Image (tube, rainbow, N blue to C red; front, side, top):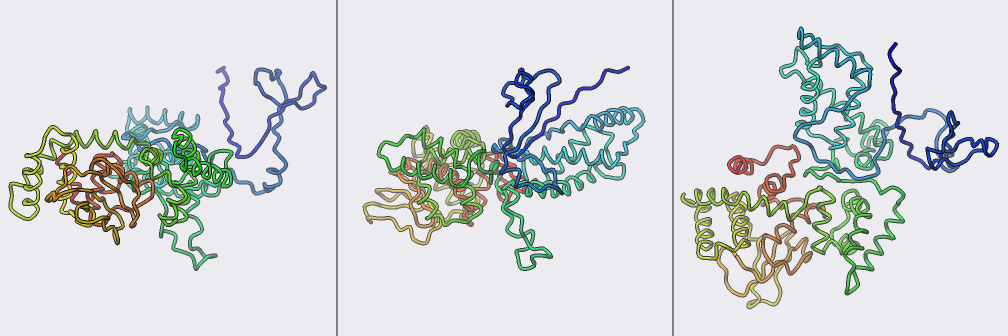
Length: 481
């Protein structure tokens, strides 16, 4: 006789409860269970819900919903999708099916319940990476499933997993519906669209609020035990701390971490005006907090990743620029001017080298926009002209610098006619902080520089959202790789 199998049952209860047991020392009265070691053998447990929570739940028609993690998502989409472990029954069936497939090539026919278990488990893992996976992401998951369990291969499919891909897409839609009902904000924000009962609302697929630039934590729920009022109180504490002459940066960072979900709701869900948002959150005009906020959103170190990849690709990019500069045409002429000035400067200065790489990249992609790169000659005017510019970099100079300013006295980031960051020492540093602000403030890329920032996002920062690269960016990306 085989030994009985032991299983572990994990139950998630999204409410306030207390676990009590019948204490024999007190005539069987219920006592709170604090240490599991004190639980007597064959003891009787009782789960007690608070009265307020009990009254809020219906007595019938209760639906079991997926557990919503209270912590933020910390994982990015992997290169190899991790196929989860399914139920004991399904794992046993798959093991036998894989053996039969290796011997005779016979595929496995699953029951409805077994296929449901596979799809539900796969959807849970997919959601751990992205609530709205791309077509490529779902295809990777389906391919990994069939590769791990060859008996699930579809005989009539060209690649053997196309049907699983379609099934996973439908399952992800159902899974998001369950999560929305359970209060998961990153999917519930897109509910309440047009339906038979609400014909006047927006179409179901319009204005979907989801991560589009590989954001890992796009719209998280409030931290456990916190609500709108408590987080608003923390925001006021941050505001008070920022106004001090000697700021406690550690305290600000801790409070910013706690109030991260509140900011994301305001900037994504409520479409708050940028000027009003920065009045409420002035700490996002501190350089260290721009980098910290970018890390909270993408789980990527802004400065380290940007400079490491920029320096790594610099030799190939310089070779590409020089090759283009040897041709004829307006773009080639501008590149020749940039490289000629660079050759006269100190080539060992890493900041000048990075400046040339970034400025020449914009020219190479035919996106050189004078409204984005502005120079302010302090000898000619007292203040720079920043009106009518949604997004630009203003470089302070004291003389005519030609086509490219290599050593500005300082650089500022301007967003919607407002100075957001000032006194930035170099142009590459301004580029870094501007890119971080685009994520922190949920800003679109400048229309005339979309290929440049797409290249920075995907090639330098490694933030690939699964979409096809822009035409110009993919050409240069393929060459560099």
